[in-house]
Figure 1 (cartoon, helix red, strand yellow):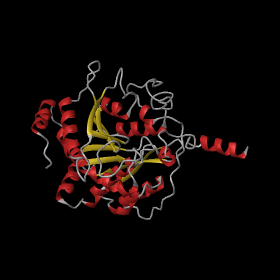
Figure 2 (figure 1 turned 120 degrees about the vertical axis):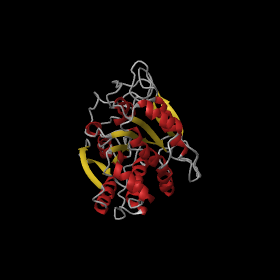
Figure 3 (figure 1 turned 120 degrees about the horizontal axis):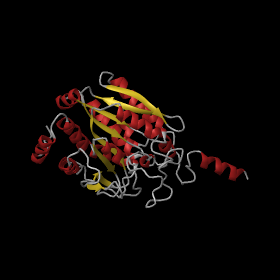
Figure 4 (figure 1 turned 90 degrees about the vertical axis):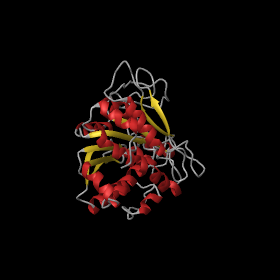
Length: 342
């Protein structure tokens, strides 16, 4: 009887035991800010320590802001780096079991801070700004589970093309009682709404090795120029072929009335007029090691994956200001000629 009660209690707490997911071990946080941080998967407290340590290192460049809290009361943070006017937005860990995604986001943050005195980075961060939410779903991340502590998939809880059920998907994927029913997605919604300077948005996931954007929906025209979407994704993917890894794939997604984008972060960000991409940063790609767990690499290769995506992230950061204040025809012309790295 005691074993049954104990199992039930574990199931109530974030559903972790019911899904066969082991909650994260309490990794030490004394290496926050150092490269050794990227040799293991940290606790959520370790992530928090990391961003606050970087803020202390560069208070003139970095601002850490609490933008909401999770179902279980964990704070959700956004990090701002740079002082420009045109913004790149990055979020990670909508799915708590995709534990490589906060590492990719945090390594890019660290890269910008460490190289801030170099002319290229200094120039970029004086004209642009990067917003990073390193962990949207801290309860799920702590329990190493896809869903939040209410059992809702945050990446099906956004308002664009939301449906009360996803019949073509696994029954375990719950979109919530209504759009933005979850505190985690409301935190993202409110943050995006408060920052009209965002031009490009990257929402990080894992499980495959691919870059997604929304396929044109002629029943609901958008303001984005799809030649730019194509150019950004194709130019961007080429920059992921490094460190022995092959280039990521590109897959446009249909959102409505059919398709896999219903209620997702990607479809909602796109509906707001942003050039939005789901970046599946690890999974079925070509790597110089054997892939075991598809959602995250072995700890020995965390740093490899983080470094692999830096050229892509830098490309998108450079592209941000090219999308600001230009008529669509002019932007299309620029991207048809190719986006240079300078």
